[in-house]
Image (cartoon, rainbow, N blue to C red):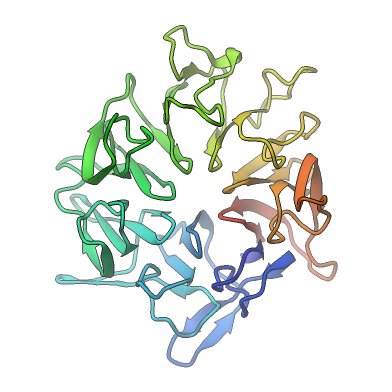
Length: 379
């Protein structure tokens, strides 16, 4: 596997050897030996998760290895700060030994959450800045990894994990939902609460299986049902569930009546992706139904062919189409949507075709999107 990145890179979060933004896919670097600072462009593992904070990136592989790059002054990357501008393997030191294999990861704006699946239970380790309780502990700064106490509850595992800018939500193996961090906008299902420093149960009216987080909202889903937890003020309309998903229960709940690949979230938008369906002429029900903020082209045009893989970043979308092409749209100021931008630095009402270097042989098998960052996995 090879990983290519483009977009915001002021802290080296693209791991491409420097700290300049780029608008064309550039191959990422990985350390092979932290002592010698040797690097490689190939990774012999399948990347399953790309989690991006404001200025750092976490990669989780199928074997449980995690790599991190970017800002690390508060320890959020779980690695040494040298060598810089490359991906380094995460290894956490605890009182009982070293942990270097994980099952889930997520990233807040300035923090990281790592789930380690051990023989009888899961443990949740956190690192970084924690001003709003987004790491699930009380310390405002966690420069050495700590374990979130008494979580998950005994007999359960972490089945899904997501973070917004300052809140985090976990779905457990028994279908329960727990969250912590900033809560002022209702993103944790509570009203009149500014922050929640440790995990609390979030009540949802179905067996939960997945969760995604926007900047200040959460979408919990399971078995075709979903609920949006967010600000009743509804500035960007994320609570306005499209008519094709209205469940009859009212409020911000929805029911998806066909197989779908998953639900994604930008900072202010929601995207339901069904790779097996083609959209109708009106775009009401089809391969991609999206709603929310669209002042920068964050919602792809209805003419977008069916994506095989859909990735949604803070304010942009990257899609791998079924014909193997990669396209992007939305806010592209940092190069994360390619080079062809309008006067406001957006790709709106259209998409940009993103091409790998002409000299490269390989097939794009996965795409990712973060905070003004974009990613392409090539085999």
